[in-house]
Length: 71
Image: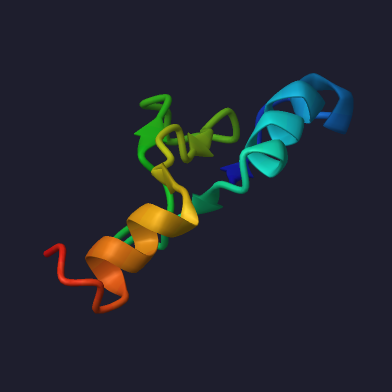
């Protein structure tokens, strides 16, 4: 997730996406602002980006969020 700045092309992240898909990982939803980084500018060169992600597999999701008795 990004606002402004240089474009990001699929070939730049395809290895990462392949890994996430191959491991059946899920990106967990978040609360609050969708952007976690800002380049500090307030003009047309302002960039907002989400830098952090939290991935889990289905076992962890079931255990902690699906009533599996974990937490």
